Length: 95
Image (cartoon, rainbow, N blue to C red; front, side, top):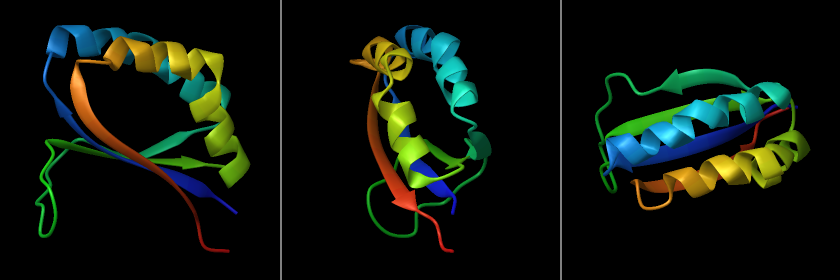
C-alpha cells in the first residue's frame, strides 16, 4: 500500500535552499518516490499558509520512513536548515 510525504514549505533563503534541491532528489529516486505535486497553484482554505505544497508517493510506509531517515536525505535536510520553514508528515495510504 502506498504512503505519502506531505510537505508544506516556505523558503526564507533561496540560495541556501538550492543546496537542498541539489542533493535531495537522489534520496527520493533511490527510494522509489514519485512526485504528485510540487509547488504550483494552491489556496490555503484552513490553517497556516505556506508558499509551497509537496506530495510525494512512496511504495509503502516503511520505504517513506527509510527515505527520510537515510543518511543521504539527512545530509540534504541539513542543507535546508535555516533556509525554510517546513512541516513534513508521512501518512499511510488507503489499501
